[in-house]
Image (cartoon, rainbow, N blue to C red; front, side):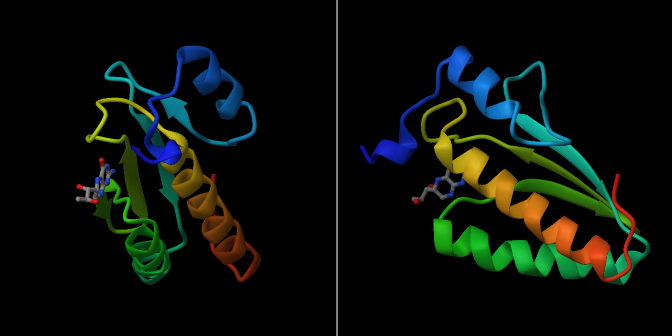
Length: 108
Ligand code: H2B
């Protein structure tokens, strides 16, 4: 199995979370965050950008969108837990959301 698909220990997860603003681990052990944008266009633009990265990484988010909000849940179903790939995708999502904020969208 590729190294990036190694299931992370709870101490690895706690360490990685410290450098990942806005994200938490839910009771099922998945990484989650709710992104807020100024409107639907911004939210959907974010999802389109992330979709390209998800394809490149071959790692795909569970997510839903209602108007200006995008709820994201990440885990690695192949190993039944969290791996480096989940943290990589989460970091990339933060970068996109941050970039969008600079161009006018709000994000909390
Ligand atoms: N995405 C996520 N989030 N978890 C996975 O375990 C996963 C994936 N596995 N995308 C990939 C696709 C796998 O099913 C394919 C065959 O590479």
